[in-house]
Image (cartoon, rainbow, N blue to C red; front, side, top):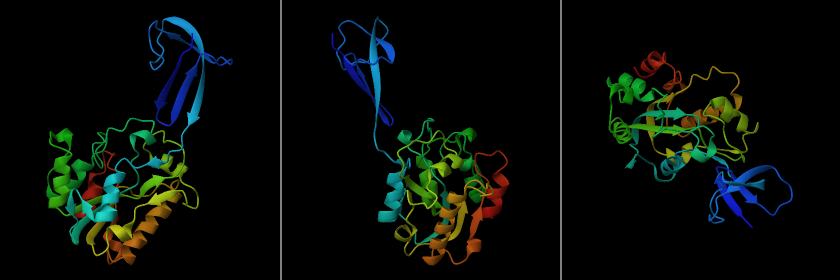
Amino acid sequence: MQASAAVRARRSIIIFSSELKQHIFKWALVPGWTSNELPAFAKPRTFTCYIITTTMPIIHRYIDELETIEQQRQFCGQPINPNSNILIIGTFNPSDESCEKQNNAQWFYGRRQSKFWKYFPTALTGQSLHPIDNHVGFPQTWKQYCIDNKVVIIDLIKIINQNDILPNFGDKEVEYKINHDLTNTTIFDIKNAFNGITFNRVIYSLTWSDSKIQRLRQIRNLINQLLLDNGCINDIQQIKYCLTPSRNDAYQSWHDAIN
């Protein structure tokens, strides 16, 4: 009897074949199943498993939205206001295929653990848009809030050109995947995105006190210089750094950065 099946799991294609001589583990077949179906526990047969690695970079979860900003100067389906209020900058949010851990984010800062949509709008306009405060209608309400308050959200990094995946969302894990010379990293294109656009304030969702994220710090410095060089801000003092919104004690830093 001949049987084979292929299963794609994130970065790998697993091929099972009963004809190969080397035996790694045992699966079983259900009588009558076709070769396209996965083995199940019935009559045991021995299969060899090979992993065929595909070449896929580590990609941002919302790369399409970031590239729309760069190419069309639009955010949330609207042209970016040339006299915008706040630019929020994060680090990196991996796509489902680029991270082992399940990503439940429904939009920028939309993971359940993040309190961004509590801290930021509360500090700016006195209202929480976080589901823990019974807010509903997100992410569309978050997008409308950005439009109404002339807010744009981006991340530093779009792509890390390394055939790998992240174990979780931590900045240290992102740091480890970036080459020392940054050559494997595609950063957000400030010049194309914000030509002719100014911001009153730029707010990072990280204080950058961690000494172990030096490459991310280099990218941050490049972005800051591009914001200055392209006239998006007039002074480095317009850039503020807040505690990461996953922390329970971060609200005051967001309040101080905005007010």
